[in-house]
Image 1 (cartoon, rainbow, N blue to C red):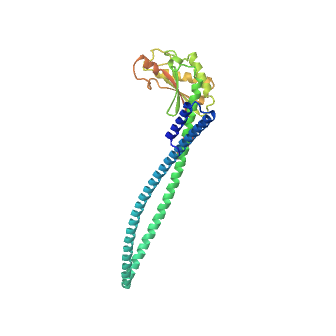
Image 2: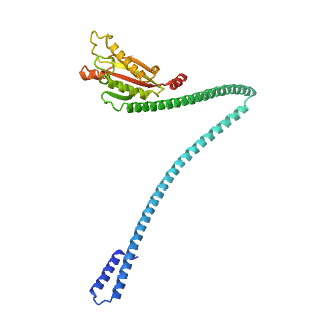
Image 3: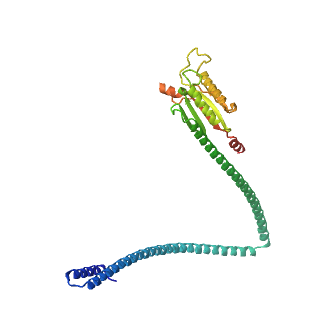
Length: 331
């Protein structure tokens, strides 16, 4: 194999000879040039061979490392097996000694008188009866364990079914939220929000969207929102609707017709919204109007902004859970 420096020097020497010898014939020049090309090709071949050998050397080093690790592992395993063998041999020696002692005792017993043999026979019968009782108790316990295993399997099946129903319920609630949100996209998020809480969809509508201060009549924009909500809920047969009216903590004006306090105001507003929803096509059997007055504030502060937040109506959409309740009753 030609080394790289020799190839390089040879090429330079040949080229120098060609340049210095001005009288060199073209034939000699071409021969030298061909020889230079061959030398460069041999150089490239040598470099390729070197790279291949380097790669093979790296692979061999890795194989040597793997074999060394394997040898060390075998040595460790051999040590462990030797420890296990020695423990087994010691155990076998102990068992042999015990066996020898038992055989000696047996010989002594066989040499005893007939009375002693009878006594031993009775003791043996007693022990056999005790063993039979133990076997009966074991069989009874095994039967109980089998029954418990069956009960556990049944409970696991019911639990899996319960988890499946809960998962379907969550999917249904999220789908309902998406449908309601899409139906009410055109309204200001400050006046109307749709959220999921505790497995229910809460549609919260501000007083500004629905009512004038102290009024129970829904404004035109609020009626539009309620009709769109009713249209989105028409085909939701397994959804119950609760309309909750909420007020702030400021008492109603004295002399307001038909109202003594915020209880009346919250209930009348919930009833009016329920009437609009049913008129828009939602079944009355699905809707329950209720009033909470000022007892469930969003913000307990006494500022104007806090009271404005608290004056709202929440429409709570709850999927029916009949199938879930049946499973819970069985449990």
